[in-house]
Length: 158
Length: 149
Figure (cartoon, rainbow over the protein chains, first blue to last red):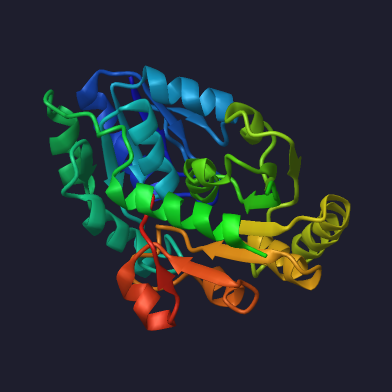
């Protein structure tokens, strides 16, 4: 199963359209959380919103997850150890307030288990692969540093 | 000494980042606030309260959120208010500051190039303001002390 998610806030029809067009060649069940959007995507099982519980269940069941380049999606892929393909939202196409998702994608693209597709062609190539890796689960040195810093600050806060 | 912490994040990435920071709060009494029903239960974060989600374009919801947060802050009387975003967190920081709490903003790791607009607003109310990337931290004159990514 492929799970597609556009996050909690905005619609992302470019991604959903792409998945709908690719569905025929994939021969795989596709569940898409499409957000506040009402397109015609007959090849997908669309949901507007998912409860946190249902979101987790779909994430766990998926072979691969396709998402916008949101931090929630990236962290979920890490928690549930699922290969993640991210398509960053573009400001020029009215998909977000600015291009921060492109910056996010650039920063995480070298990490294992995280793949970036800027368009439908790249998405098709990645979804056809059978060797997609899982992201690393654990938190690294940068995370331990942040937590240690906050812990000290809170402890010493007068 | 055990402190009372109010930890605020809207649903989605902001909340997930806050959850990853929980080890920093482990020694203290934490009250969580988010914007989506069922979310705190999924993460075993309790006690928790819900406030309406809001942003710059939803004045009415921002007002409702503000009123709800006033009630919560007067009841909980936190020593520390911490938020990863977005606007509900800024409001919580402003109110926290008004009742003498220490206030901490950790800008979302989503903002690798420039600080979020809520972060730039939060800077006014946050005693400790962190960006999770060095470039925006330098540009905004705030601190960098690691990242959850």
